[in-house]
Structure formats: structure tokens, C-alpha cells
Image (cartoon, rainbow, N blue to C red; front, side, top):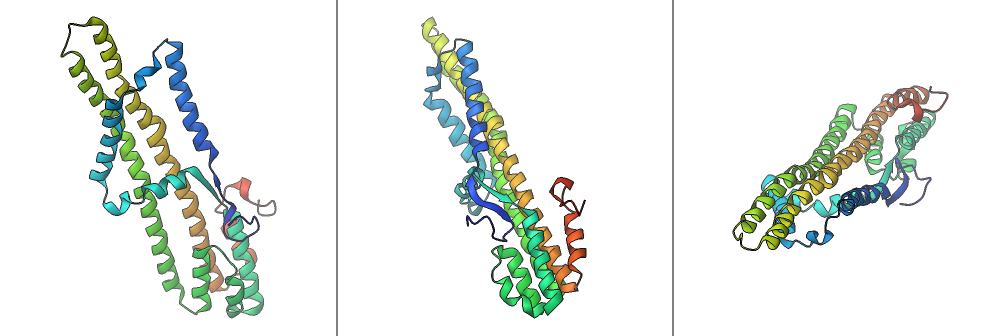
Length: 270
């Protein structure tokens, strides 16, 4: 899936999403840089207790919030986060217009062979139903149900990261409290007391960092990628129904391009 010319609704295939990596690195540099400027000892991060509280606590919150079927999808969500599939609605519209031209000239049955060359499986299934003579209401119901299921699945995926993100800062406070309890349990060694208190607040720092710099932004990014995919699916659904209804290619093109922001429309459509 690396051919730039395939009519699949995606441009450029699946590539590394470097902006996510850049964002993470900028967050790390901001925190470490601030600590260095303040003269803090970076060795305070060698704190297994804080890491245990934050990461195990976040995972426990997610397990308590979502069923096992959603938990099993977490590795796949990370793959989505760190890869960049550029959903291209323009390519989808052009593919639909091309199919409508064929249907206009030669009839719906003439789509059978060209449809097999479409790699967008959602659009392909819709056009196959048109060729098979399934009525418009059934096609709309089937395709819309799939869109809803996809949207719900994506919503759950983004929700997992949001749950982890909103839980993380509170777990950081909990880790700091636990650390202070341990530090204040022995006040005899003043030097060790200062180090223990400093170490206790590492949990708070990590909790806020992973919550507001990593997990919640990950949730927002998944939601954005979901919106892009759903937009392409909705365009495919409407295009399939327009073709079955026998609308002209020009009308179909105008209607579908009207759903896009102006900068994505060709000059003639503007």
C-alpha cells in the first residue's frame, strides 16, 4: 500500500508520524531543561516507586473502565498513533466521479470490473452492492451501520488514553503523599529527609507530564485521525447512493466537493 496513484482514499500509504515523536521530545526537553536551569538533580528520576504508582495505577484505571476486548486493542492504537495514513477525501471523490462516468455511459453492471480495482474496501463493498442490485435503503443501512461501528470503536480507543491521562496527575499526587509519609517517618537524618521529600514530588511531576503532555494529547490525536477516516467513509457512502440514483457525474462532484474545506476543492469547484 505504497503506490501514490491507487484510488483508495489515502495518499502516500502508511508512514511514520514524526510529529508525534517531535511532540514527545519537545515535552521531555522542556521538563529536563527546566530542571537543569533550576539546578535540580536529574537522578531523582531514578525512582521505581513513582514509576510503579503512575504506570501500574494508570493501567489499573483503564482495566477498571474498559472491557478486555478494548484493552487488547491498545497495541494497535499505538501503531495508529505513530503511523500516518493521510486520508485523502479528494482521491475518494475523484474515484467516485470516475465510477459514475462509467455507470452513466455503460450502465451499473459495467462497474463490476472497475470496482475490483478499488482498494478502499468500504467504497468497494458499497459499489458491489450497487452492481448486485441491492436497493438504496439497504445499502445505506449497511454502510451507515459500519460507519457507526467504526466511530464507536475509535471513540473507545481515544477514551482509553483520555482515562489514563486524567488519572495520571491524581496518581502523581498520591505518589507524592506516599513518598512524604515515608520521608517524615524518620526525621533524624536531615540530609536524607531533604532528598526523600524531593524524590516524593517526582511522582507528581511524572503524573502531570504523562497526563497532560502524553496521554491526553494522544487521545486528541486519535480522535482527529478518526474524524478524518469517518469523513472519507461518509463521502464514500453518499457517492455510492448518488451513483445508484443515476445522478450526473458533474452533480456528484459538486455535491461531494461542497463537503470539503475550500482549499481542498479544485479551482473549478470554487
